[in-house]
Image (cartoon, rainbow, N blue to C red; front, side, top):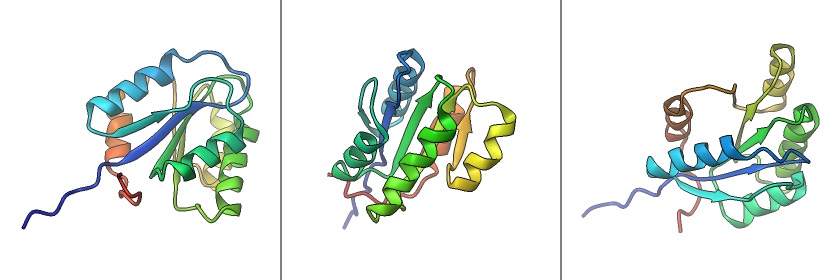
Length: 138
């Protein structure tokens, strides 16, 4: 008997007022091409929208692109909302222009990885593929 392996499901999106979506679309495509199920939320999402969609879509992880400088609020807020909703098992990772001094507090808040502009897609894909699949995969 063959046991079906559930694909990893990842929500990717842009939170806040940042309108630059080329990078997040490239990440979404690289993940999809690697066999990851990707849900792209589009631009100008609120942390509430991201958390709610992630729960509704039963994702394993959320990847957020933040180029607006609001990462110190937006990423922890998504984590806070997931915790409030009992979904703290969803891994949150981010990318964008995040100064070195801001990285430790974000990681302490629960952000599992932060990727800078120019990070090879393979590094992001390998991070995601290394996550345990906890969603339904349906």
